[in-house]
Image 1 (spheres, rainbow over the protein chains, first blue to last red):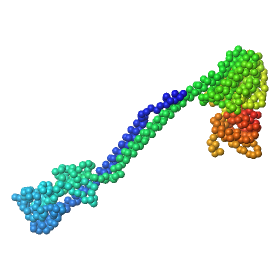
Image 2: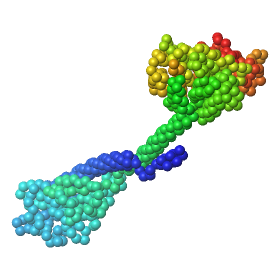
Image 3: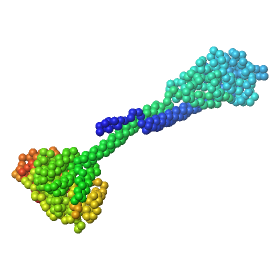
Image 4: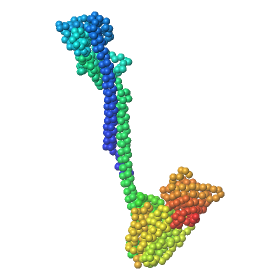
Length: 526
Length: 107
């Protein structure tokens, strides 16, 4: 039995398919959640960046009209008064101001000549392009951005012409940082914004006005184009910090880490449960196998301990033994039929208390001892007294109920002795009745003496049924009722003895009994 | 006796001097429920008394395992008396031919 247990109780290694599926699903869900969190974080960062860039652009475009107004005002004043007063109205000129140079020019068909100058000499003049350049300007009542002027330090040139057919023009230059690099003040509302300004609508390094970082700007960015005189300025911004906050940035990674941890935990739980279940299933299968084996062993042993009934010309015999339905153990029930010259035909039915091998062992010794005493010619009463010497309740904690019946040779007298056993049922043509046998103590219980065996006349063609308690007893039922049930099931006295037994068993215990059952039937042929 | 509250069978020993030791058997005595009573039974069997009275007024059921327990008590003491056994239990003991041996009175 042990080999069955050890050989088949193996749990195969490797992951169960269910575990793999669960882990895969969990990882996919985790990845999806992390991706969603990441997307949300990126979107909100982008949205906030766009908002910041737009705000920066708004601040920028708010500054543009002041440049325009400043130059337009100076131009109007110069036109209304005389060019020499121009200087008095221009104050905002210098390295740290908007403009480094502002000048007033008189245009004619041949060119343009300088009327007044505030600040440094314009780069345009130094390049020798001023006259040609300024005379070709078309008035459009806007700040005209002339573009980059290269030199020792880059500059941006602007011109302002009054509306209508005026000959005056204001020309201004502003200085750009030498490397086009500016720093955003720490306390500024935009101190976490990296930006680059380009002249025009497109981002080209040749059009870079200024930037707070190296250009072109890398990574997530937003850009806004704002009007700047007769052209436009494109503001490109990116950010160095998580605008949506650290928590939002950490969320995808948190989701990923927690999700993977949960996936692993879930997968290992599934694996554990699956393995336990496999073990349990195997254990159940092994138990089932052992149970069947044990039942078979018990049944085989019991059958081996019970006799084959002799074929007798004068007596029709049949017996049935049924192991208890949940019984995997051997029991202590037995029957026997011994026919001798002196005694006639002796039948024995007995039941050793308890179950298992101990009960079966006691049963076997009592059965063979009974046979021996009967063979010696002992009567039923003497046999029971001798059996009392073989079994001691005080040492073995067992007792046995035994019924011994002797049918004399003539077949018309019956002797009965009972040691705590049910009396036999006699089924005749007029009905079934229990024979009233004086009942002594069970074998194994010490008591002064045994009641004498009862001898009664035996009617012709009756069937005697002897049995053990398993046939009739029901829990919580009075024995008289149990016996009455057998009485009814045994009628009428027709058919073979074997047929009667089968009918009784089918009626009383159709699905088998809890306890072992023995029933023995005898009918004297006349 | 709280520890026995959830078992199906109980065996309670009450000593009273002078007089017999009174054993109260209650519940259902069968092969499964009798075994846990072994310790209680041993304690009872060690009692230094000649006479024991068994009160079965609360005993609902008894099979041969219970009968075996009764026999052990009967064999251990000089005098045994069973009181208040139900008709069902009386009949079980009677069928085994043990009424006299176990000192049974209907009641």
